[in-house]
Image (cartoon, rainbow, N blue to C red):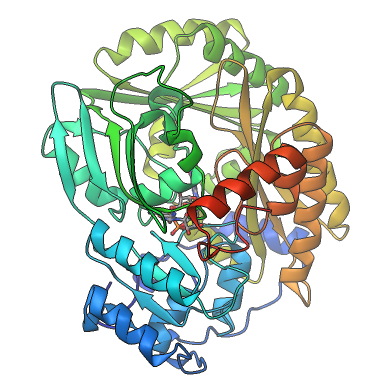
Length: 521
Ligand SMILES: Cc1cc2nc3c(=O)[nH]c(=O)nc-3n(C[C@H](O)[C@H](O)[C@H](O)COP(=O)(O)OP(=O)(O)OC[C@H]3O[C@@H](n4cnc5c(N)ncnc54)[C@H](O)[C@@H]3O)c2cc1C
């Protein structure tokens, strides 16, 4: 956090800074103008000019908090509070652009360690002040915007150390506030990697990944974030939990799973012990073309179930392939598959997988197509900024389903979005996380903003969420529940499970201060 109390070097009201901005390719710009009604956006209100009411926290509470974290680490300036008011969904960015961020915290607290986090929770519990844990601030599901006004944000950016490395067991303990690039740098100094590469890599944190059950682009090879977690330390209003002490255990239910995905509602994760792997000696990416999404899905399923499994495996549907080709000047048609291999002898694995892909109708496009994907793997959020600047609306949503229903879920969700946006939308889809039993589906929606883009999206997103539920898929594969998916989550888990969650929360957080309105229905 810099001296203005800003959380990260991300841009204000956009993913990237102005210097890192990316241009839309001309062909994409032309295509957009043909199919959408573009509306030039209003000028973004600079962060320094965002007006918020003064901090209304009781003086005694502020003093108690200052005693815990130190004077300089209780920040009440408007820029710091505006920065911490929301995450990075498109509605969040649009509100920020207008200078009207969602419910801003009264103060941003920056504890230095676990003991200070515990003490902050104690002060806030005693005074009934709601607390929002804040990692990288990249939530896209309203995970940082509680329902109770008057809250404080606990920014974890000072918990940014590598605590321990056990190279024999291949584990490392990382503090929760470490952003991924810094965590990668610290591990690389020991010749190790986490292998967690979400698209939010630049800003998201270790604690945020654990709190939301994140999944990265290399999940086919390295697994989801929760697969990597061997132990956790959690500060709760009731005290400290340290969970996980062996590579596997039959000692009762696995309580790590209670906190993985708990989205700051049961406690604040202060460090995470993760399984790590040696830095890959080699990496190789390549592209393949399939005649149709159905044909590509069949090939992807065979690799996921019978192997050999690439480290990165993603298949774009026809529309995503077509839009990607328009951006890059290619026009191959069909569906693009990217396979990436990392590790020791990647050639042997790639050759064996190539046999499976070819046997299912895949046509090799070579290494350049794969390297192009790898070079641009973090571009999408910058292109969203460019789309918003060009007067379009762009947002994403995701789900996961068993293989037997993946094609239907894809079609039903796509159709629900198109029906909800009758004046036209581009709905791009892909599979990027695969399992023996099924896969994720990720959709990017680009449409005209209309006079009220946030309301328009709320309707379309609700239609998509209803379609996901009706098709028997899950409301989220990796973005989490936040405030936005809470209703669908409650239906998905059922009444008994909702009661169970509420009971656990009441036990750990009797004053109900932790992220009220997030996750727990
Ligand atoms: C452009 C973009 C691309 C994305 N791509 C991916 C992707 O590829 N894969 C993926 O999984 N997700 C992705 N996301 C979603 C988001 O990055 C993830 O949910 C990420 O795990 C959040 O990490 P964070 O540190 O930013 O957490 P935050 O956004 O700060 O917090 C997320 C939630 O967790 C809680 N929380 C944060 N830290 C802690 C903690 N230490 N203890 C307890 N609770 C905590 C917060 O209160 C909040 O409810 C993307 C988001 C964006 C904007």
